[in-house]
Image (tube, protein in one colour):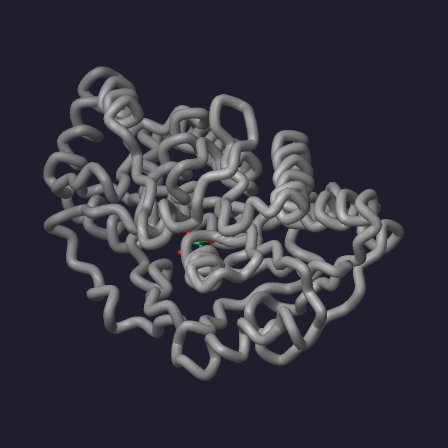
Length: 343
Ligand code: F6P
């Protein structure tokens, strides 16, 4: 028996742990694992390599993905989708483990709807896949953002500066919120909580009036600062899923520039960029990746196809991919209340 595995979309720490978990559990069942190169591109091009326990053992704590990744979308036309589905017969696959965020998983869901033996594993530092409490990569990224905000904070305090820190987070503010709260940010702007520039400036001024002449403001790249002029997202190049590269909007720099004018003092910006996706996974992400990888193979073995390995109440449970497709998990009311409390 042979199964396949791929990683699609933006990379993140913990992907290798999941691949290793897949290979190890497959071997235990006497199955071999074929690793497809660069996400769905490798499936379409039949670019794959056999993965062994030996080749995957030392990657547990290595960031990124040993298989490479891409944002190739086989649903772009019916021929590509048919070609992707033919991989089962052509490569002799009993099943396919798809590790990805909402876009990558949407392909898995479409295949599962056709009856293909697919299991999905949720990963993204954005943490916005529905039905799972935490996605692989999120914990590491939160740690990175928290450390960065804390470091910016000590220099902001020393120099009595207002600094804007831009994080990733396209449609949901999980990373900005958790990283900002943990790093003790003084305001956190997220897509779920639109704010006006004037309100942000008043917030900084009120702090200064209380003797706090520094402020660290965390801004998610997809945050909504309603009266701030930034390029409309559409003018920037988009991927095969139609997503524009939001970092190109330069929200952090734009917000810093506008605050600088409003406050009449220098406001530097720090854009964390790919540092948030890189580096070794935290122990939590190593274990979560491992658990999901093993559970995905168990799902294929038991015929529990078309499922996502979701983390709920600290257990990995199968959730139908059909319930996940096309939805985004955004910050909930309890998180938003926390942000309000600590502004
Ligand atoms: O992985 C998700 C994400 O980190 C988003 O927060 C961000 O908008 C996007 O990836 C950027 O990825 P890339 O630069 O690889 O297109």
